Image 1 (cartoon, rainbow, N blue to C red):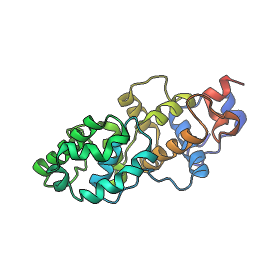
Image 2: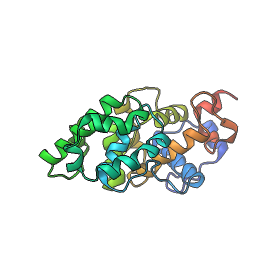
Image 3: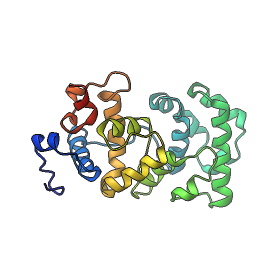
Image 4: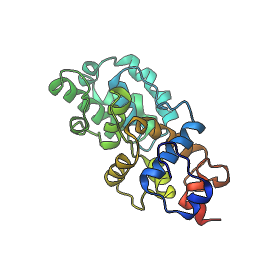
Length: 228
C-alpha cells in the first residue's frame, strides 16, 4: 500500500485500519480536489490586520468580522495607530462582534506590545505570538502559516470536529491535536488543509447534521462508517 501515490482501494481501506499518516494523505488529496482554492476567509492586507481580524472572530462569524474591519482599518492603519488608540473608541467599531470590551482591550494591548517589544512588526514565531494579549496557538499558527509561509496547523472547531470524525483522534485538547496533525500531515500541505477544513465544516461536515452521503472523505471516515 503506497502512501506516496495514495493508491488505497476502497476495499482495502474498509478492511485495514489506517495509520494517521495514511489517513493524512487521503484527507489532503480529497479536500484539495474538493476545494482547490484554499484561502483564509478573513479579509486583510497587512499582518497586523489578520491578527486583529482573527481575534475578533472568536465567538463571531468571519462574515461579521469582514463587515466590521474595513472601517476599523481605515481609521487605524498601522500597529502604532492601534497602540495609541483609545480602547473605548475601538469598542465602538467592533461592538457587533461580541465580547467587544475584552477584544478592544486585547487589540490595543497586542499592538502596544508589537510596537514596544517587536519594533512594530508582527512576530513570526508561535512562541512570540502567544505572548501577545488575547492570542493563543490557533491564531499564532494562522499568522505563521498565512503571513510568513511557515508550516502551521490551525486547530479550530472545524478542525477538531472533522479530524475526530475521520479517526485521527478522540480528544478535545487543541494542543495535543495540533501535535497529532503535525506528525500526520505533510508540512507543505498543512496551511491550506486548515482552510479546507473550514470550508468543508461549513458546507458538509457540520456540527449537528453532517452530510456524510455527500462527503468526499466518506470512504475512509470512521464516523461515516459507524452510521452505515
